[in-house]
Image 1 (cartoon, chains in turn brown, red, orange):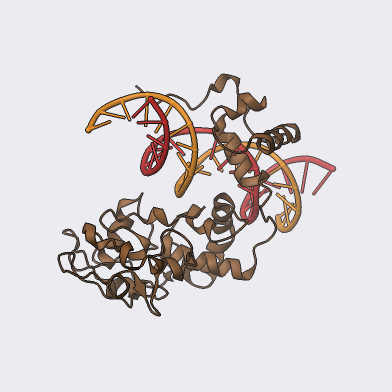
Image 2 (image 1 turned 120 degrees about the vertical axis):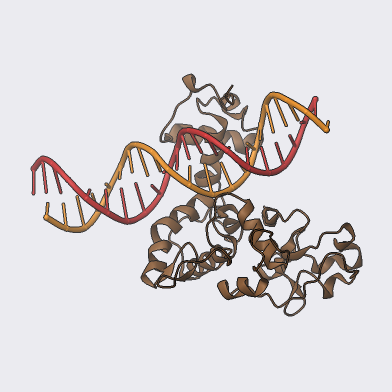
Length: 256
DNA sequence: AAATCGAGCAACCGCATTTGT
DNA sequence: TACAAATGCGGTTGCTCGATT
């Protein structure tokens, strides 16, 4: 038994959107707002599936989109964020106002990849191209493993949680691979009693958490502002990189 | 002028995650 | 808690258009 299709494919348009379809979608969202993409096409009189409407709106019709060429500053920011986050395009897009994940993904694949290759940098690992291939005992945030878990392992390793399959991985190794990532922090094993959140986990140089270093001071991930009540260590998990490391889910960095 | 090639980008697909019951 | 539905994300495809032969 397969998964049921997201929509009735026999009665939906595919391919490029027409001007009329765009206008219908814009008019509907202006009147009713975003939400319930599944029922939107019918309500708006569009022969499209909800996913298609959502994509069209988010990537091209939203009024706050910037469009136009990327600036040199945006280029560098994308490279930096990619070195930290890998192919987390939605997270990267969250740091670039007016840009969408699809746009950044395309821009990466068509421009930045080549730019880095011209600089002699491997766009997947952000390391020099002529360096020998990584052996099994080193990691990189930017090396592109399949799906989620290996990257979580990398972060876990950076935190000093030894991987049984990879016992030599250390935070120092990570910093070697990612010089931009400030790992000047204090890491202690979970069993130790440390209830001074600001001085223990999640703080980088200057007493700011990683969320702050990414400009997320106002996000819920910022641990600077939490004070005594915000420490997550009470639950056995540290809040490093704005993460609950008990689950090691940096996807929560996303800001909307 | 026609054919070919490659870059750029819009859109689709399938899977993962979140949300609701 | 389990399940289904809805939504979100990232990889990939395929079309368009300009450059080159």
